[in-house]
Amino acid sequence: MVASLSGFGATGPRAGEPSYDIVAQAAGGLLAMTGFADGPPVRGGGALGDFVGGLWLALGVAAALLERERGGPARVLDLSNQDAIFAVTDSAATLFAGIGARSPRVGNQHPFTAPYDAFAARDGWVAIATASNKLFRALCSAIGRPELADDERFRSHRGRAAHRREINAIVAEWVAGRAVEEVLAALGPRGARIPCARVAAPEELLDDPQLAARGMIERHAHPGLGEIVLHGNPLKLSAAAPRERALAPALGADNAAVYGALGVSADDLERLSRDGVI
Image (cartoon, helix red, strand yellow):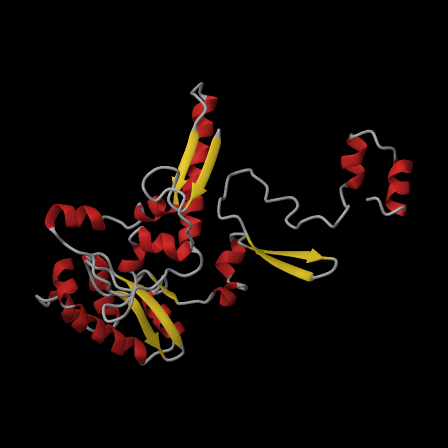
């Protein structure tokens, strides 16, 4: 099979146009959805547009190879980064086409419920997500405000979305008076079991115990650069060993194997190396 990934694909009026991550996010609809209502569109962090396209590409290649193994024809995969981003904008286009509902920028919040946001504690930020009535009731009890669960304004997803400012202000005030670990202890798995997490920067995750337990922090010795830290492979397959050689080999490290396969003797290989040919 043959697979290609480009900004706008090989067909259509924009085929062949150049693109970068932010262009893909803009053309695919994601940039307009991201950011706060009173601010400009905001690019998703990292290289989201590039990685989303890469993931779709890998999925397409795997599907085509499986089809081939089952006797199907060889395929040519043409993937567009604009297509890939548009495919992950949730149901925004469908909702607008069906009922005329637009997707305004709501910052970190969820458009259809609340609280679902990042809140400032004394020593950092905590993301808290309640996307069910059960979780909202648990949150109300955990912050000492059980009566909020029976408040007509907050009893449904639609009501909480309509009154997000009020409920977010209440939760924000509770979080603000506590350290991050206090919030997590009250709301996390040892407390109310509400989905929540410290807002962590990538550099703060180098010693994260969960990522370490999952093999996502790889540390490899390098003869010239010291320790090299790499992301692990998020694909965890049973009975599959991790990569055997994570770092690129040193210059000439595979000369014996490569030239040996071509019939070059060890003596000739040593002479070529001594003469600076290889």
